[in-house]
Length: 359
Image 1 (cartoon, rainbow, N blue to C red):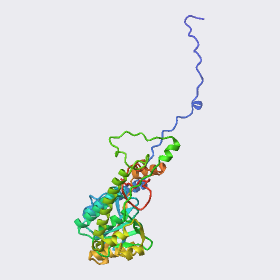
Image 2 (cartoon, one colour):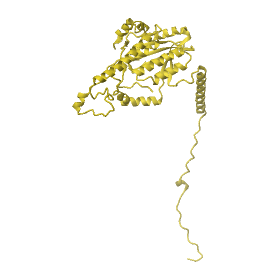
Image 3 (cartoon, helix red, strand yellow):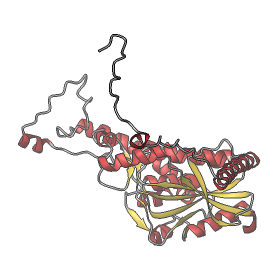
Image 4 (cartoon, rainbow, N blue to C red):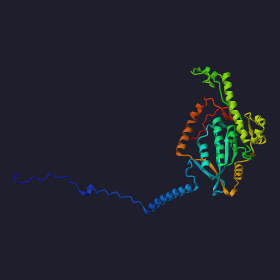
């Protein structure tokens, strides 16, 4: 090869545009159509107008500081009337006077348009202190607002449920019971059980250490001594006297004839007919009848009043906790409470296993 001759070029791979293919198309930008823009704008506008109207309504009605967990639902009479009759509820076993019951009290107390209260009671009673605090708060509410209370008894308004009903005060024609209501059961009980024989069979022995022999009084792990029984009886007697005093405040006829109350205060529950004959209630009627009486006591006409029910407004947390309670089947706090010697205004021979607390 000549030194000045250039070498042959190195062969290159044969690539054609046809084999490589065309470049991928650029991604198309998704555009929001005019219709979608209009729909979103309309929804936002509606939401803003709704919020504005709610604020104006709350400001105009003076209820902006009300508890959002208490919802008012129209029950009867003039839906657009300014003055109200509020239906409050006491349901289930009474363990305390907190939760939804207290929120109802605060709602009625703040609302200047409430002119009367209908107390719907469907309860077997419960703890002495819980029943007494409920009674106290209701009576105080009626006194502060100078509004009448009319009671409407449901299926059961016994013991502590009857105690709470005495918040109506001495006003006549204020306690209504349905034809199938059981009421009364005026009395006090401290549940106690002796499980010593069972403990012997399973090989369990009570071996507590206490500062005094009375510290463990009422324990189910040993028989109750006469000393302990006498002390508990004194506690029951004191609570029983208070129960009868409260009944005399709500039923003035028994203040004039305490012997008649003593004949009824045996812990017995009475039918509505029996309660009417004995003077424990005023009328046999339904919720609507109690509402009509409450409207009458306001001095307003039916067209000037709207009747509302207080309903519990559940939040997501309430629903979650409720589902947890259902899955557990019982309230551990209430189970522990069974072991505590406690007096009850309660129409039962067992202490409450399931908690009625609502916080």
